[in-house]
Length: 327
Image (cartoon, rainbow, N blue to C red; front, side, top):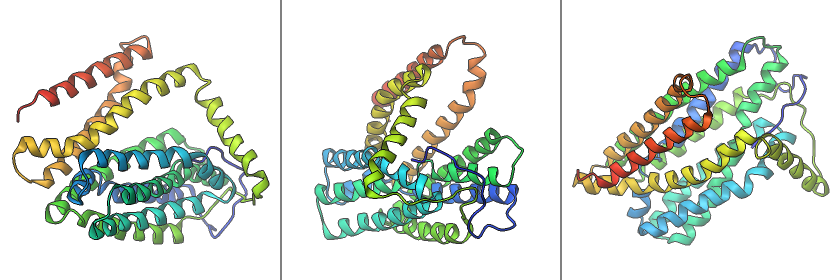
């Protein structure tokens, strides 16, 4: 995760760049990356079950992925803040591509939960290299060209574009999985290779001056990132509430996200893998719609906690409804 922006000194092969070309590049990179990543989201549990893992082992492998993200979040943030956002993004794409193919290889070799867990930890490392790096790259580059527009509008459009890419990715992954559960992984690796090529050519660090961090100073750099995270996160009362609620809500949502794939196919009564992709897309679409409704609902609620409460109630009711559904 990257946490800070630097000065506005242009650097590295980006001569002639203007704000609109930078923004278009950001949209392209973010959407291609999300599209690639989303290809396996709707079929991941089914793939691991097909590879010979039982449902408990599937959750262990997915927990290893989450653990990798937690452990490596701060160290990768240090790299992005010192060596550059471009380096961090390229490392993310490369690691995800390799670990995606490693998943397929482990399945072909008939490896067990330990092998999949190791690969999952490394895959988590890949995602932490991406976390915040592209957004920080955009902010640095726009500052370097003295962009006068509103960043919130750019990020809002980016969220819409990546949301659409996520929908396309999950549906496509489900359709590919109907042919062969390994196929979404192979296509994902190919797409990530394409993203790497695009980023290698078109993503240059503008407004950022890299610096070398000696091993002796690494701990201090990590503490800087940790202190910034605490200052803007846990020490802010409203954000602290969000973190506390999200800890439980997202923890359960992660479990449900992986559990519903075989559950829905069991309810359907047939091996229609493409349905998993469609359901994943519908869940993503409902999350996008919910985020879009927050501002409107907020007009009728004086407190954020009220919105949280109603949102949690809807989430709980929907979850119970899924559990009680007979078809």
